[in-house]
Structure formats: structure tokens, C-alpha cells
Length: 251
Ligand SMILES: [Zn+2]
Image 1 (cartoon, protein in one colour):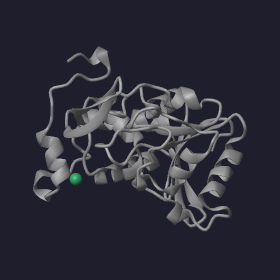
Image 2 (cartoon, protein in one colour; image 1 turned 180 degrees about the vertical axis):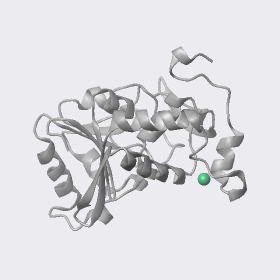
Image 3 (cartoon, helix red, strand yellow; image 1 turned 120 degrees about the horizontal axis):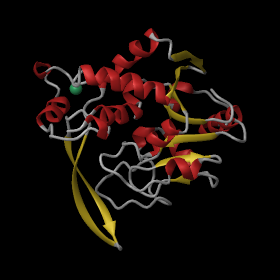
Image 4 (tube, rainbow, N blue to C red; image 1 turned 60 degrees about the vertical axis):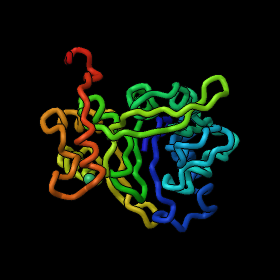
């Protein structure tokens, strides 16, 4: 990884362990590798969309792993102020996680967008491409139209309300395709860290490559209609007429 850079980490501590010091020891090791000028970023959103989100008390989704929760609890960490929050520790933390909420959640003005804009890297440590949230950014920038309807509770001036929205979400099994695309172009470093397989890539290279592939085959990440995948079927059925984020592409 790049010393002094921005590093977005998705990790399963169970896959990496044993690590001296547990999840805090893993965070310390990542920070040491990044150096004092580096910024460590992890997804840190809420697991329950129907409960009000409080950035200072709401735990990270258990699916994000124990390391993300340990990073959240670190007094030096900055956490985004909305329910799709990321957490970051380092000099660029506020710049990465400070955006307001956006829908769908992982667009250009989100933490994954900022990591890309800042020339950051992505480390998948003990998890695969299906956990790689930045691929959702590429979906949006490619203008995919598949969507699943989602619901969450937000608050406005202290009063809770329910918001229905459409998100480019599906089972994400198809993200495994990205491994071959990245390997074919030598854009992904792979190795072993502890007991875990590790993949390291540049965010902007990932987004560019995936966006180009999606423009040719927009539904390549979705299971075929006869595969019986409820989530992918929902996404396909929920397709909306939408504009690409690249305004130059037009409607
Ligand atoms: Zn599927």
C-alpha cells in the first residue's frame, strides 16, 4: 500500500487472525503502514435502516466485521454523520467521510467517491469483490438502470420520517468477475496477510475499468433471469429510466 495515501479497507478479522492486539492491533498495523500522513477508511454504516442513526452511538453493521466497529470506537476516528457512513482516521478523514447523505448511497459525492477522487487505494483483506462497495460507484457512473426499492428512517429537525428510495443493489455475487478483469490488466496486487487473501488496487483504476465494461454489458453483474436469484430479479424488475452521472452522455 502507498505510504501517506488514502486506503479504503474491507476486512474480515476472522480471516486475518490471529493478530497481536486483535482488531485494534490490525488497525494499528494498517496505520503504521500508511504513516502519519496516511488516512485509513472503512465502511461503518448502520445495520438497521429502520432505526434512527446517531453517528456517536449507533454500532457499525455486524456484517462489516468487528474491525470496523473497533475503528468507530477509536477516539481519533471521524465518522460520517448519516446512516451510510464510513469511518476514517488520518489527516484526510473529514474530507473523505464528511459529505451529506446522497441517494443512491455510493455515488460520486460519497466516501467511495472521495477515496477515488483523492487517488486512494482499496484493500480487500480476507473478503472478496462482493464486499467491494466502490463497484457500486462504477455502476452509477456507467448509468446502469437496475434498482431495488429500499426504505430507511431519517430525521428532519428532530422528527423521524420514512424515506423510500431506489438503490443499485443486488446479490453482488457477480462482482467476482472483477477479479479477472483486474488481473488481466495487472491492476490488482494479491498476496497473503496473516491467514487472509489480500487484494490491493487503485480506486480510480477499478472504477474506470468496471464502468467501461458496464457500458458494453450493463447487466453483467446480475444473475440470469432463470437463475432464481430473488435480489437480481428484483433489481432488473425495478429498473428505472435514469440519467448517467456523466452529463455529457445525455439522457
Ligand atoms: Zn443474484
